[in-house]
Image (cartoon, rainbow, N blue to C red; front, top):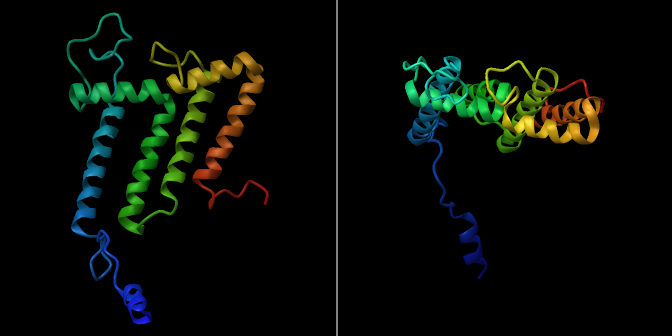
Length: 191
């Protein structure tokens, strides 16, 4: 019986192969990274070339018949949805995904990726909320500044805590998000 239990302990486990014998990523992992990097580049180009007056947009009275987005109608629609939902914080999400893909390519996997992604999302929403709170009229969107998530959060907080209280809650939200996303690099929080 003991020989049987040691045989099962020493047998190799079956799992998805993520690297070959010399430690480099498998072709499947490289293909997934290439697809992710291409999608990131397409979304980045769509966001950089976003024009609110494209015919996809609902926020203009007279839309131009020509879509000026570099990625075409799909890029215009994608950028519109991203900016409507996340507002100015969408740039942080885009930058973070690009940095993550770069780290994967040159340094290998990043620890606690889902948790760090949640922290980045918190920071992005916090930045958009500060934008919606402090500069509500500085936006090309008819909804206002900050994106729909931040606008609804700021309005709910303002109704209960006023402008100063809302700013304090959003600042706390930002600090928590920064700590979750960048715990190793934060040095301004006392231990």
